[in-house]
Length: 355
Image (tube, rainbow, N blue to C red):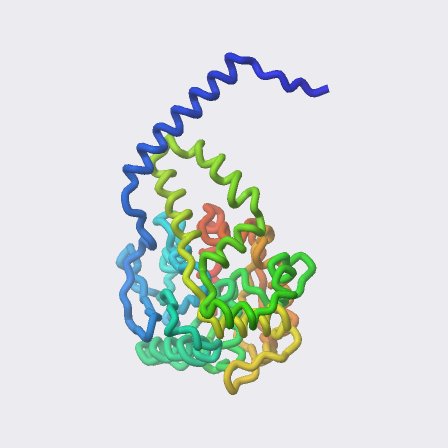
């Protein structure tokens, strides 16, 4: 039988310690000041509408040794500074250290003027013009592309319809099969009338999507996290790191209504990449058109993009240089964990350098 008795002196001691941590924590939070977003110096090299294309500077001052530049295509949801959240947890810095010349598309914050933007605008428009800019700047016909989450799906569509412009493709936590049994997010949206939602709201509020994602793991993401936070409050550095993550989590841009409509209906509800019925503008998307080397990276504990949703990619592309790497972590840990910095990012750089 379990004894649930708690000694009064022990309880009092824990309460005093808890109060002390809270007191110090309030001081440290006040002292934290403004929380920065992205830590690596970068230069805007191309702008169009809300979009800004950045080129990153290597903090060491060294020039890139890989002559094929790398373009990072992030998701429309949340902000891309997750890839550069702090000095010792930066995917971008890790890639720079391996000799990559790193570019990144910042989609900005869509407003009502962007409601009519479609996936054709994003993929055959914005992404294609960014690729062209980089190719022109470097005197190349093709570059390397790294797509992240929804940005990975966009990158698959882009590579399938513009194969001559992509030298090597890296897909990170990228959904391909949107109907795997363990995809809770997909199960939630199968019976939603997206037309009514978009016709009513216009652009989809980022806050609504953010709370949807948090609701996938309500205990750990909206309750337990803040209980555990108390143990960090004695350390000002850990407080700032925690606040950085919180700022990113709740920094959710609205989604252009027509792109959201198309993405949900054709990818989540229609599973178009697997069924082969996706058209982006005048281009039909056939994953079999992807013949360049492909590195597919997925997270084993990913609750947003289950591993099975990504692993199927190898059976649909025509590349004779296809490889996968499983990461023992979650959807966010794949960018910010210490293990990812030591193992995953260097592996990506090595894979690109070998090609």
